[in-house]
Structures are given as C-alpha cells and as structure tokens.
Image (cartoon, rainbow, N blue to C red; front, side, top):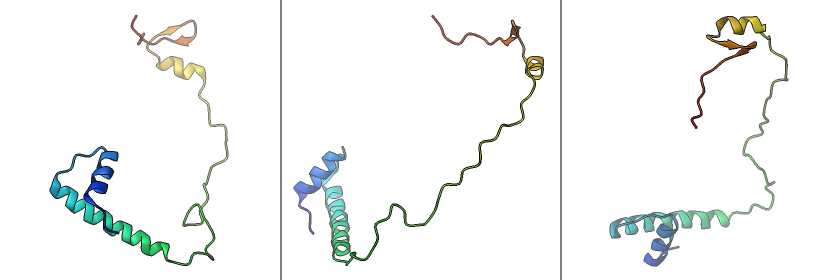
Length: 96
C-alpha cells in the first residue's frame, strides 16, 4: 500500500513531527513497507489460533506476606540526632 505525501504529512502531524521533504519521502516508503507487511499478515488463516494475552505461558511469582524482624524502638532512638516526647525529631521541610 503506497502512502501519498498528504497521508505521510497527516501521520507526521498526528505524531507532532516536523519533517523535511526528504524525510517525508524516506518515512513514507518505510510506512508503506510496514503496511504491506501487515497486509500480508492479514492474509494468514488464524481461525485455529486461540487468542492469548501473552506469547509465553508465564505467571507472576509473589512471595508470601510475612512479618519481618522488627527492631526495638530504643534501637532507632539511639541513632536519632534529636528526639521529642519519644518520637524522632526531623527538620521542617515545608516552608510557609
């Protein structure tokens, strides 16, 4: 399927591209080849092919939720530069 210059410009506009005339000719040829390839794929008999969401039979592997080792509060407080009423004190980061 040979694309016209007008169609190539329209595709470039949709993609928000500014193309020179040389680029329009080059990309027009490439887009035409891509459309020809898609046309060839459309001619294949796919009636016996089962639809799938992924080409490989894979599943996600998740680990079980498990409680991790907790450090005692005194451990964190010992490393804190500043504390206030048993809480870690941090510098204010919001101005205003």
